[in-house]
Image 1 (cartoon, rainbow, N blue to C red):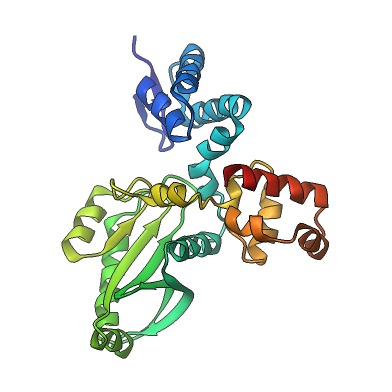
Image 2: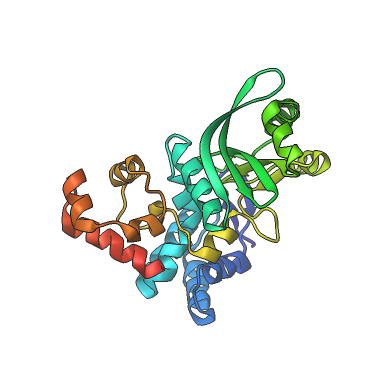
Length: 277
């Protein structure tokens, strides 16, 4: 009898051996290791097991067999840990855009025709200008069409304001961008594509979602590292450090002294960052 798993939304779905294998491969595991992981998981699963438990088992095996793959496997959960507020996620995404050659600026207030709007970050490269809104969730909640509706309504007002009109006079194209660490509902995608809102989320667009751009530049959030707990993460956020690239650049002795962190603990974290880099 076919087994089912309980997903993060509390829904039952068929257990997929293929998904287990592919998720291990995406982390960088070899075909042989991915097959070994799949075999071990399939021998221990039971009907009604949660996808969270399967994730933990897969990561545990990978960390033992190939630490680098095991760390990378936790990317989705690492982004969820960029909380509890939305600020660390906004900081991380803005820095990701910087990595791809954009000039970025966070928490910018721009006046539309009617009122002012606080934009999470702006990103410009050549003649493309994005007004970005970030939607962070620490669960698997999807971004619904209502969010896209509000984003577009504010964008219409912004287009009539003097700031965007000045960009147009310079032949710079302004676009609205919605970024999330989760997924978009089918209605949100349909509406956004219809009115011209750019979307960036987990595995969306199919040709390059958020995880694709993170992996391509190895621009991982610091929360992906096993030795970074929530207390340490809050210290790094205060220092405006949200990625492993930032970690690799710090002077460990100076930073440890300034923030009262044991040097051995900080060096362990930096070594884990260097392993991924």
